[in-house]
Length: 187
Ligand code: AR6
Image (cartoon, rainbow, N blue to C red; front, side):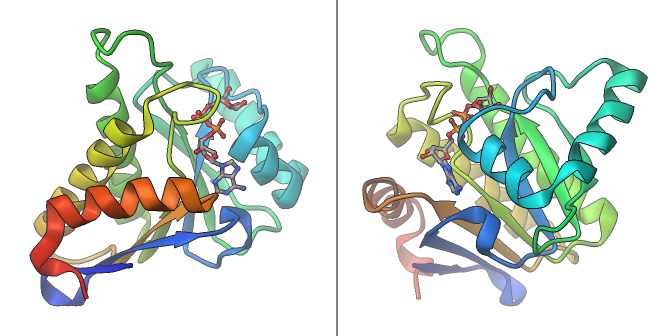
């Protein structure tokens, strides 16, 4: 599914493995220790190689980790990208611990990092919807709304955002949310 924004910018939803898709900046669903883990994080470190962890070691020494809702940038190692942005999504508890704000902040922070680094294409996984337990329908609305706001606002910079969903069920949830939010923009 493709959603068009002014000035030729677009948001694409697709099914796949994020590590296989070429972009300028690939977003990881990391943890605040920047320690690596399972899910997308495991796949990104496996496919990108040890250069990514070496960059994270330096960041850990400098700032001790990364707070929830924020992100840090590293090399992409041997991944088909220039950068990996390691975003720390919220662990979902009851929806009253600032989860929505923190999740939105992951997306907007990564798009700002992309802007700063001149990245024109950025891919995101569905942050927090695996090990961190965020209900996917709500997470999809937040992700899409935040990406849409940023694509409408930014004059230059990021041209294309890919939301890479791992399976058909995740894709269906996100495409329903996109239809509800962007009905008039879907190509
Ligand atoms: N490509 C695209 N999406 C994927 C891939 C992939 N290769 N693999 C999984 N997903 P998760 P979280 C989907 O658990 O919930 C890690 O251990 C998956 O189906 O990767 O933010 C970290 O180190 C799900 O919808 O991230 C943290 O400790 C989504 O990606 C913690 O898990 C996110 O699932 C972060 O948990």
